[in-house]
Image (cartoon, rainbow, N blue to C red; front, side, top):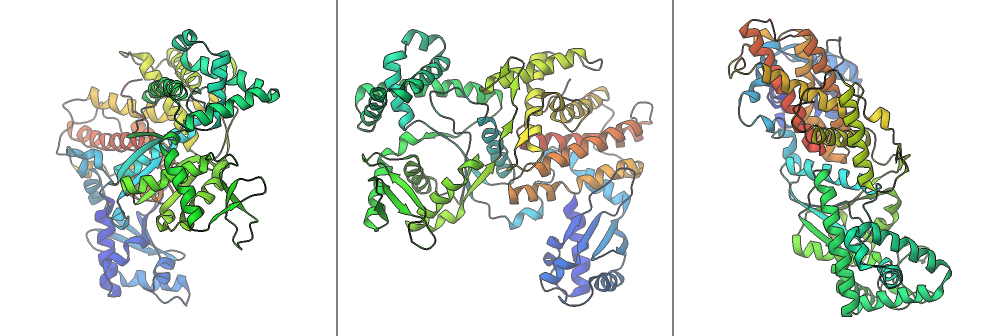
Length: 579
């Protein structure tokens, strides 16, 4: 594993510079590999040592690199040391590299490869609450909620795999004026029979109709306000209808989540925090933070100069609460209930100001833990449509991905016979959606492209799945050939070495992802691994090789497949073993 080599190099540096070897671990990193180009294994950043005070901050970095490189001696682990521009490169013994990197894959815990790295010792592991997906009740699952769902799932998976205690929360939009509109609209346009037949579709139709009506009919708007007030005052008829809408919607959502391989520990919602929202208003009032605007609304000054140039509305003029008031109550309640060490909200970047205000008001109320709350914003998906035209519902997108993939698989000459082609097409289609979404920075908008997304040979989720299935097939065909013992000296070809050099970076990639919560690092690492494995598969045949060579090569392919599968699961992708 990378830790073994990192630690050995750090020990050498510690002896030369009379420092603890722990000082050098952050300055050492595996060198990114390039196909058909030999490279060293690790590099030491001189600037990192200068900024940490290990080396003088003045002087020429090139001279410092050369002077330090000359003082470090080669040994049985490190066989070459060279100075570059502000870095020192280390090449480790090739046989030892093969032995140490493939050692974990002969054991039962090979799925933990890279996860027990010393790099993660510096992380403050505790309880992380991740709030994601959070669709609105009584509306079909909109395709726009896909990003929040899969990004939040990735963050929760990553944190959990690194040893955090993770609470996965779905905070449903199950309160507010939309229910006033829906409740009033259902009385006019609703039908219990249609509600039983196609619940969410009917609620969606009612919502569209009532919105059109309320736009030019003040009586309907007043009826909506009255219904919402009845809800806030817990009048039984209004609450009963609301509960019916909520249960119908959660059942429908859970079906979609199951398809996406997403689960939640807690289904919460705005409705849980009506009473707490009123308490927040009272606390703001007692602290002298609540002001009254010209329209009679309750506001909090969030300006830096205290001049009311920026305010956060927390109460309507009629005394009812707002979305942010319930968010404030929810945050306070979660801290009391779960005592989280950090809380992460995953929503679109359009809500950045909402969360700035939320954290500002929490700090104003004396909650210093608001500094450990974070908003992970994401951009918009443009051009998401199906063959039938513009789409708004996620299930349409999932069905389309499955059907297109099923068609592509039926046309491919390499497709294997499988027990459930639809299930495989579903998993591969969803992995294609996830990888297309995760390849770039989360905050960027991107253009949805069906054809590019479903290519088997491009940098796609299909390529990840195809590579994994191919490795599984190779291992199945050679069952009984592999074993616990293999000869590392039989894997010294450049093609083998480059795969292992790439695996050296795995723990660093996971660490980088844990710092900025961006899945692109892991996606791009896995895509590159697949390209390197494809080359190795061509150049290192198992069939026709001697038993010893076959055993060694199978260990290499088994190790690569294990890392690929583990990384895919962190991304939220279910690996397939046939396609």
